[in-house]
Amino acid sequence: MEAPLLLLLLAAVRVDAYRPVIIVHGIFDGPKQFRTLSAFITEAHPGTEVTVINLYDNLSSLKPLWTQVQHFRRAASTVMEAAPDGVHLLCFSQGGLICRALLATTPDHNVHTFISLSSPQAGQYGDTDYLNRVFPECVKKTVYYFCYRRLGQRVSICDYWNDPHHRSSYLQNNVFLPLLNGDRPHEDMTAWRENFLRIQRLVLIGGPDDGVITPWQSSHFGFYDSSELVVEMRKQEFYRNDTFGLRTLDARGAVSVCIWPEVKHVQWHSNHSVFSSCMEKWLT
Image 1 (cartoon, rainbow, N blue to C red):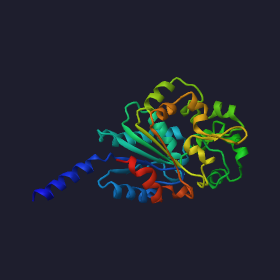
Image 2 (image 1 turned 180 degrees about the vertical axis):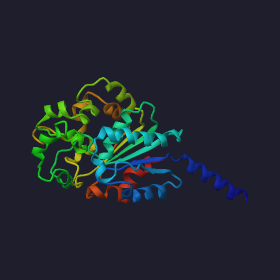
Image 3 (image 1 turned 60 degrees about the vertical axis):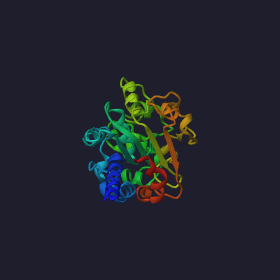
Image 4 (image 1 turned 180 degrees about the horizontal axis):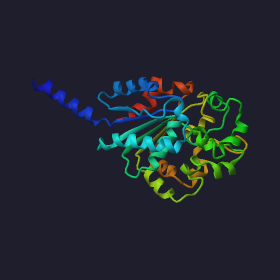
C-alpha cells in the first residue's frame, strides 16, 4: 500500500506544480477555436487549469484595442489572484498585442511566461484576406487614409496598422502601437517598461508561410523599413533604445524565438508539432 500511496502523492505534487494558463484569442475568433490547444496543454500537463477568456469574440474583436485591454485585464486578474505561483499567458494573433498591453499596464501581474503566437508585435502592413474582410475596397497602400484618423482608431486592426511609407502619420495618429512600443514618448513609459519586465520569459512564435501576419517577421518584432525591406528585431529602434524592455529581456536570455514553416495563420493553435516544439516546455 505504501508504494501506490507514494506515487499518488508524487502525482499530486506534480499536478500542483503546473501554473494556470490564460489564453487570449485573436481577431475574428473566440474560445471555440482553442479547444484543441487547450487539450494539448492538459494532455501534456495533466491538471493544468486552462482559461480561454470569453470576451470580444468574432466581430466584436474589431472594437478598439485599449477598450479590449481593459476588460481582458480584469478577466485575467481574476485568474492571477487565485494563482500565488503565477500564471502563463498564451496569446494568439491580435491577442498577442492585447496581452502585451495588459502586461504593460498591470503593475502587480504575476505572469511567468508570455507566449506570443503569430502576433503582429511590430505591426501589420499587408494585403490579406483579413484586411479585405475589414476594408473590402482597400489595398494596403490606401488603408492609412482611414486608419490614421480618429474614426479609424476605433477599429482594432487600425491600432496596429504600421504603414512604413507614412511613418509620421503613424506616430502621430495611432493611439495604440506607437505607445506600446515606446516609439512615441509618453508619461507612462517607465512604468509600462517595469511592468512588462516582470515576466520571466517571452516566447515568440511565427513562420514564413503564415499568410496573414505581414511581414511574418513582425511575430518576432521585425518589420519593414521605408523600402519594404525587413529589419530584424535587434536592429529596430525600440529594441536599440530598450523603450519597453525587449533588449533587457534578451540580455537576460529570456527571449525564445521559434520559427516554424508550412503553418497557415489559422493552424497555429491546432498544430501539435508547434505546440510540442515551441510551447510545451514553457508551460510548467
